[in-house]
Image (tube, rainbow, N blue to C red; front, side, top):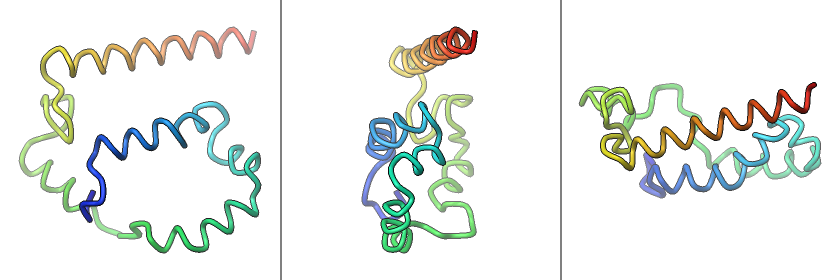
Length: 109
């Protein structure tokens, strides 16, 4: 986002439908083992150089906080959380989390 390559929605969509799906099932370390540590190593030799390695908070994040746009708690952050659309996202997240926790409990029983 800092470089203007992608907006918040695009970043969330990419992670949600790629890494997020796998990490939700087995976690990042098991995912690396399953994908092959050599593959993860080779990708990291070039990909990590292009990723942000800053040691300070993101300027975009700082600007949001300074503006009082703190996310769902204030109704605005990188997304708009007011109105039916924002509330629907929160409701769907909560329902999916509860469903997954119930499924996890059943599997452990």
